[in-house]
Image (cartoon, rainbow, N blue to C red):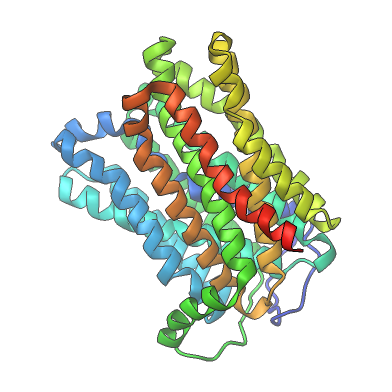
Length: 398
């Protein structure tokens, strides 16, 4: 692969080759997977490091908290510091965190590195704005969409891969292998990423204070953040509750549930498609379709429970398609606002999405225990409707 070690002035786009898009997509998927490996294998980790079941739930929570902290405090630095150096430093922290996780034998140490692992995994959110910087306006949606497809695949494949590897080789092999993969990714990025020094000269404190101003003064950012927060709440609600439904009412084993998640990854094909739609000027109708179809994706299973697992598969694929479509459309819009503040825009956008996803995950078990899959369907449909209402009102005013 051709080395791109030149310095790229701010606002100067390069044509991203297919090889570079594929590399960025693979790296994003592999990096984001780091925060999901532990979720399905907590039951194996906890007894091995003498951690109580109640404390074990903190593993996922601290990883998510670390990711949220990284989004707020680390990603904005992409508008201040040289991007390649920042990306490599963050990736190296991931390598150390993963290796320490694989070797940890004390509960306290494991929880600490879980927090650091989430924090360092936001390096994926440094790569995506950089790809936007390296792309001309006419093809930016296609480039971002292709890379986001890799990111969604990483999210969807991390859990089943983690389950399979842990079942056959032990849970420590999951994190040890991930650390080796991250080391290889770091070498690749060091050899291929261009250097980009932002023009922003303010201090770090001023950079963080500007986040509130940006959110308050940028209607497009607020709207797209709200739309995708609602969609990602539905996404997290579905993928948190569906393993319970598959195990309790369809008798599927952990391996079968992992295969179900693999089938759901088909929805990742939406990313490049939605990127091309955005480049062609079809953002509004594509957004309307994503929100509307997302709100309806649960209905077949709700109205025809006899569809069984097949109905859940269709619902999962359709929902993933809609969520990914809306995410790429939103990124395409906010990345077009101002190249100089692109990393801060991305930080605010992704933090909003994370809040929505955390809300969906938080209510999933409660909703399922109280009303079963029917309540999950109703709650899952409600979130996209919340986004659809202001979208339609805005369209009416226009």
